[in-house]
Amino acid sequence: MTKILAPPFTEETARAKVQAAENAWNSRDPDLVVLAYTPDSEWRNRDRFLAGREEIHAFLTAKWIKEREYKLKKELWAFTGNRIAVRFEYEWQDQDDQWWRSYGNENWEFDNAGLMQKRFASINDVSISEFQRRL
Image 1: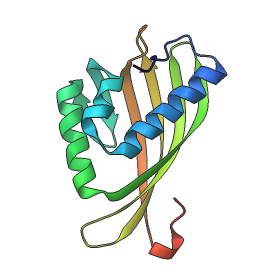
Image 2 (image 1 turned 180 degrees about the vertical axis):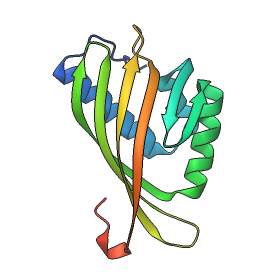
Image 3 (image 1 turned 45 degrees about the vertical axis):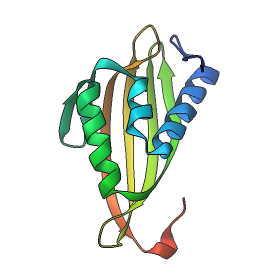
Image 4 (image 1 turned 90 degrees about the horizontal axis):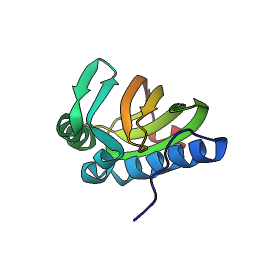
């Protein structure tokens, strides 16, 4: 069992938390990803508001059906106490074989056990050619 990194965060533990999130999301396994969130976790993802692991799981399942060949890179932006801010970009291909790069920022808040209780994400998409892919 991997030790859950809990607040208060240091630079080292915040970077490790970001890397663990990147690794989990790149697995594209909703069963794995939802374990990082509290059972009553609150999300804003673009214009969607989600509450709890069940809604998050359904959202992620649909996301990775739509966003094929998904590959994500996260970067620590800032941290304090029980909060971490990240910037990210990910690339994916839609059902029409169009490639996209999505950019954004996330604000995370954790409970004392190190599970994410709030996630607020702002995301923008840019169409790219296959030759413009970086990830």
